[in-house]
Length: 215
Image (cartoon, rainbow, N blue to C red; front, side):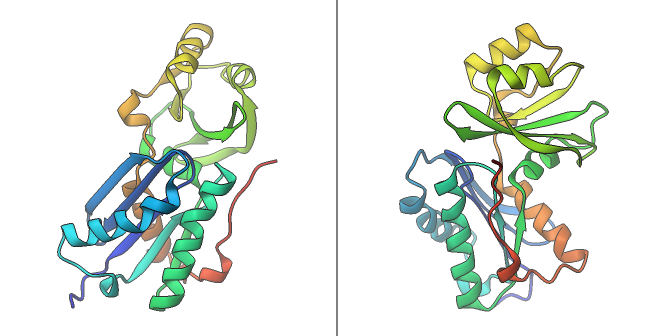
């Protein structure tokens, strides 16, 4: 068994799911896929494949990081349940990260305001506004029409923005929208945020990690 820290990050917040392994310096394995509603049937298989890919075992994990929403009610619960079960079984810490924070971290410390956007079902989005990765406006639910109304100044948009929504936002707002590949919510960024929490002294209490929903 290696002494190197090894964090497993799990994200099933929306129809896009992700798994990553992080060794305190870099992402050593990462998979992102369109899960639809099949999160529960694929997640553990992807975890096993990620560990096998780098020649490590589940017993070598030293911590877990989970995206705790907002997003799909059922989707958020899948990764959260798996992560809590693994944390209890392995007696390792678990850190929870807001899924919108993952997108803001991916955008980086740009000069523009950053609006992170997630699917929330029934034609709605969960969205939050950030400045250099710091949340400056409370997350809220919005229809596409409402999202368009929220973008009144030049803003970088990142997240679940489909082709039709992209066309309208580009035509009707001063938004700058991240390219489709850059809009993917990646578990590698989730892992980095979990590692930051660990380094800041957060004990990673699994009992303190719960889902985030916006009503």
